Length: 416
Ligand SMILES: [Zn+2]
Image (cartoon, rainbow, N blue to C red; front, side, top):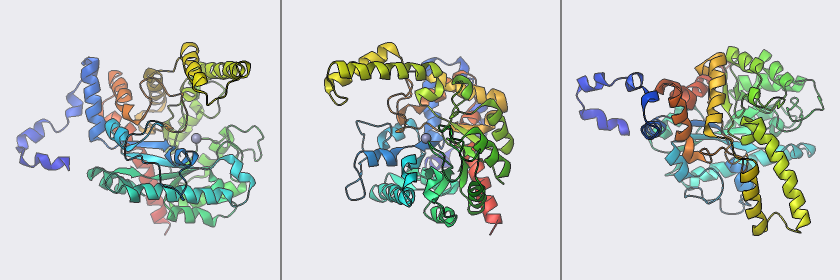
């Protein structure tokens, strides 16, 4: 709608500022000016986040389908996402994670049932707050919603276990609106091996997994390689007909030995495939020192609780825990997150990186200055300070992931 305002502007003025980004040197601005510029960019550009765990946050909060949904149309005291903060931060299309814990894999049917209920919950958000949220099943939907000022709720299924052992469920979930599937979660499943699991059940992608990837290509669901083992990653890349995504993974160089993040070899392979890696903001994903520190803090706090006969829910314990963690394991910084973007850009270029915060999914580990969806401009400002252009920021915010998504749509259309 903003574009209408320009209707009365003379053409010469339009031409004079046709490409404001190329003439602005953001590196020369004061921090205050730059944050203003970053906020303006965040507001005027579509911003997609590859992974926000709101549906599961609602489930954990007891907001099942039998009860009213969590009202995220207003500011919520907990969590990292709601409508007002999303508007402040310029976030327009958070992928809602339809998250299936690996524990469900033990019970046939339980994974699909949970996926179905989380999808219904997400749909209910959109149908309850029609002036704020809308479902989105394509880049075109997101653009249309953006122009109406609505926040899009595209959906990705985190854990291919929802497919159960029936290939027909891939098309079923496409019909239900799922636009990416993370092949595994924490444990090996029927599709392939997971990064957190050392069992090596299949040695990578299973035979069933190969069929699943081919079927996802055919129906038009993006293949998400966050959470899979390196072998599964390589196997899936070798057979996919279209570019892939990693919806919420960071750079392993900053977290040596943490297979959940991507090695340089995998980043290069993904870039060659034309895919996009969306950076996770969680403290343990961006900084191994922080990850090691949190393990130590956890150990201390467990002992402290036992010695003082306290429980996790005691307010005295919570205050102590917060102060102890702050003193002994300070949160990483926005700069550290920007380092991950820099690394990918230096290694393979600007066209293969995006945002995959994992907001509402990584607990109290988020970097200072990037604690919730309202704070995206802080990250954008840091990238501008490092010499990123407006066009670079737009690629990170949506152009890269839209390129992949459209390629997936086009391939599926060609198979009909
Ligand atoms: Zn995850």
